Image (tube, rainbow, N blue to C red; front, side, top):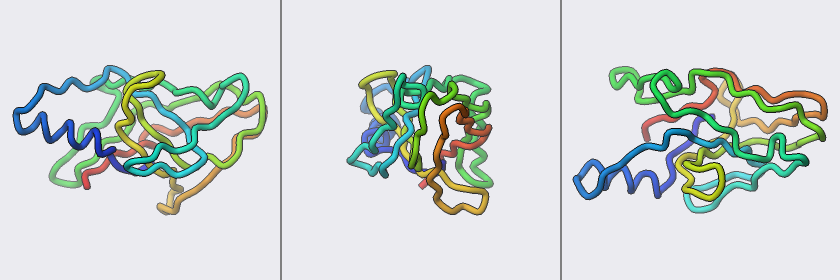
Length: 146
C-alpha cells in the first residue's frame, strides 16, 4: 500500500524538525479500509459491513520491531513487519482499494493514506467474500519518502 503522508502529518513533522513543538508518535496506528480514494484533504469512504469485521479500524503496533528501519542509502521507506489479519467476513465486502492510517481507534488524525497494489505495482481493488478472511502480508504497507 504505497501512498503518502497527510498534510497534517507533514506539517507536524516540519514543526518538530524546526523546533516549534515536540512530537510523540502514536503507540498504535489504526488501519481503515476504503472503497473510494482518499486525498491529502479528503478521507476515503470507509468499508461498511455488519457486524463491523472489516469496517472498524484495525490496530497496528507502532513499536520497535513492528516496522522496518528506513535505509537512507537505498530508499527512504518503512514497511509493516507483521501480517495483519481480519476476522472472517460475515457478508460480502466489495471494492476495497485504499487504506488510511489513523492515530486513534475513533476520531483522531489521519496520518497516512495509500492505494493497494499488486506485485507489478498496479493499483488493485479487491473483494472479501463472506466466509473468508482478509490478510495483509508482512511488508504490505509501505511508507516512502516523497
